[in-house]
Length: 183
Image 1: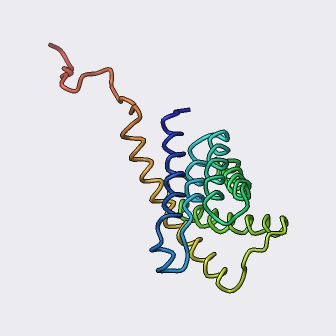
Image 2: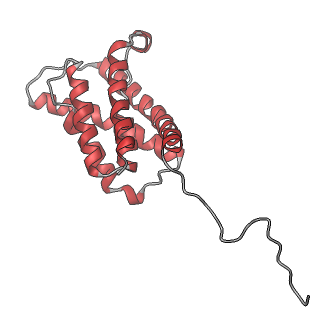
């Protein structure tokens, strides 16, 4: 496990939560603040082990709940559930396909708010649910579908910039000439 990669993932979670809380133009423009944590969880679940998934769920969920009206800790379990489901079916998923990334991002971004709503209703917290919530859920789903391939491309560039790349060397020099026949 590369700890620098884990640090970048957790820093991206912190930055995503900070930008969601501080930027008001998406919320005032479309009425919804796009949540990037499910898209980041899709990337983490497809590229890392369960410990990094749990760290992202705990850190990102607590940061998100600290800056929102949610009860503290209610976002941790939905993020962990999304990451766990993707991690368990990782060998059946195609990581490099942009279509698969969009579908997984949309599914994660659709499931995470529903599980959070279910938990909040069971905690007897009264969230405001109406027809506007359906619009918010649809925008979150589309936003997660768009954000997931962008996060994959970003972290692939970070990986290429900071990690050692394998050296593909042959045992033969490229300028060597092979003479065949009788000399």
